[in-house]
Amino acid sequence: MGRAYLGEFEELVLLTVAVLEGGAYGVTIAAELKQRTDRTISLSGVHIALYRLEEKGFVHSELGGATAARGGRRKRLFVITALGKRTLGEMREVRNQLWDSIPNAYPILSHE
Amino acid sequence: MALPPYLLEELLGDLHEQFDLHVEEIGEKKARQLYVQEVVKFCRPYFLKRRVSTLTNPSANSGSVRTSYYTSTYSPPSFLSPDMLRNYIKIALRNLWKSKGYAAINIIGLSVAFVVCIFLFLRSYLHLTFDNFHQDEDRIFQTYFFSNDPEKPVRSGTMPLPLAPALKADYPELEATTRIVSGRKSLVEVKGKYFDKQVLQTDPDFLKIFSFPLIKGNREAALRNLSSVVISETMAKTTFGTEDPVGKTLLIGSDSNKKQYIVTGIISDAPYNSTIQYDALVRIENLPNYQQEKDKWDSQFLTTYVKLPPHVDQATFENRLKSFAQKYFKDNLDELKKKGAQPDQHGDLFAVRIQKLSDVHFDRNIAGGGGAPIAVVYTLMGIAFFILLIACINFINLSIARSFTRAREVGVRKALGPLKTSYLSRFGANQR
Image (cartoon, rainbow over all chains, first blue to last red; front, side, top):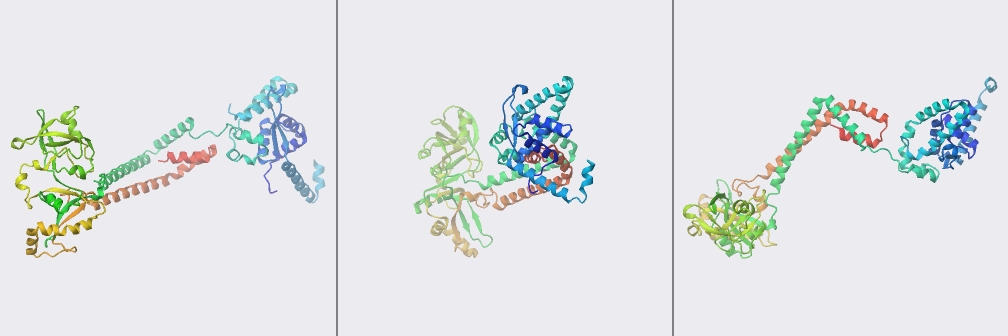
């Protein structure tokens, strides 16, 4: 991949942003990830990942409306960009190719 | 509090929202603990310090909203902030204290070198600018005699009384000529008080040739009268105090030579870099034995200055002066011929020549033993430069020897993450 490096956690966050489709911000992303991966997810970690992704141009953000649940504070909503989508696709492609190239992949898969 | 302001709102909002979720899920007590944990986790460099590249190059980000908050009021703390300055000073003092010997050698070495250099350069500057403050200083010349004596060619700046009037009569194109008799200080009496002052006997043209500013009085008329005296600013203050001296009388000379003068003007003090120094100016006719001496060509005791007209250069005028020597110095020529003297490269046995006033200071023969030869001045400058060079090399040497210790400090500072410019400038300023 000739583009910016994407860490494992960053990739997960980027995927989550894509999944949540417009409703993605700090808390929802953290909750989603927690539910799906069963890891402890810290809010600050999610935020750092989001800002890094934005610096790299994979997501795009806007300040959204305030809700009472947030004590009247606005939230920053993240949306995946075309570049982000393309990068995710490429990464998936690479992984698929690698998986396909493993001589006897089936046993490893069944182990899971 | 340590968060950049543009992040504060959204992060607090997220924390607040998550806290509410946690309260529902796991109870308020645990939610509080988690909240504190999260807040602590937000205290990491990434939030406290934004990348410089995104500040200076916001185009890397897509989206105008994002751009606007990167360029918001937040900027990295200036390295000039009081806290950092205090830290720098502290570290500098500790470093000095830790290596006292090294610091002492460096500080003493450099400061002594600087002091010596500044002193020498100022001294050279004083000599190089000698007498060049006069208006038209390139047209003011001092006359001197050249005689090609077979034993040793002689140049002498002392002139007889009749030379200047003869020059004036024979060369009417000269703008001005003046004679100056300096010599010892004279006794000056003002209202019963006595002072020792340098009284110059000179011609009225003195004020035409030299541009020492006249504070009071008229340049043309100040020395017109035989009993006029022009006094310097300092002398006016010491002798007359606060009152206006113009029109007042004073006595110059002692015993039988005592004479009363009327102050007709006040002239600025001569600058330190002037060959001509004075406290007061009177007419040369007041010399005690002027009448007997005024036609004696062989009694030489004064200096003569001329101001050439514009467009006449030194060589041209010296050529015109050849006949002057033939006319008035027959005796000298005959005597030299008897000694077997040969003409020099200009064809002169004996000549009246002129030397630029600004060069007189560098010519010991003409300046009457005073002055500083130009070679000495340049040698001084050379020494000054050499001392500075040695001090610099010494400093470089010691610095290189210590650079390994300093490298560790720089490493720590880099790791703690100031901007590149900040620690570079600090290191430069702190370098001893």
